[in-house]
Amino acid sequence: MAGAPKGNTNASKENRLWGNTIRRAVMQDETETHTAGKANKLRQLADKLIENGLGGDNIALKEIGDRLDGRAVQSIEANVQAEIVEIPYLTPKPDDE
Image (cartoon, rainbow, N blue to C red; front, side, top):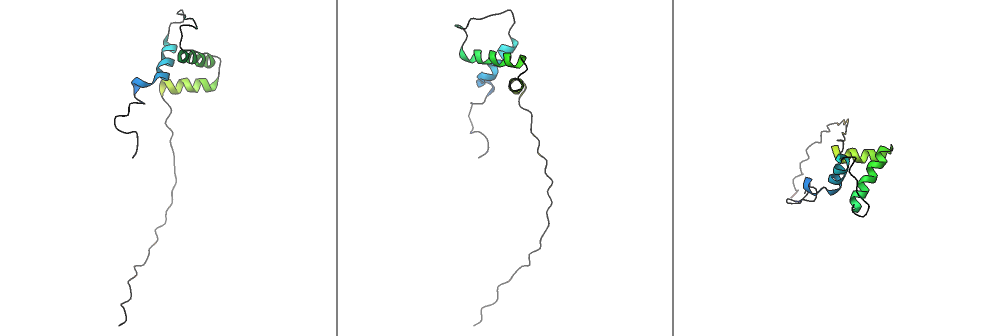
């Protein structure tokens, strides 16, 4: 069976908590502040990821890009050469009686 079972909502757009939290942190007005006591751990991680990305961390930049725009599609090229081999049809010998 390929893919997720029918009815699996684990990867639905509504359940993407990490991506949604990063998206909110990116879009938030810079003048708005929050204290560490009020921010949940997921939000703190998203803020740290953005901070690292702004500092030039390539891994953080890639993660932000992957979460906001989706991962780039990987293409695979293959050069396949095949040779057709003819197999003679063998007939069984009649039984000697």
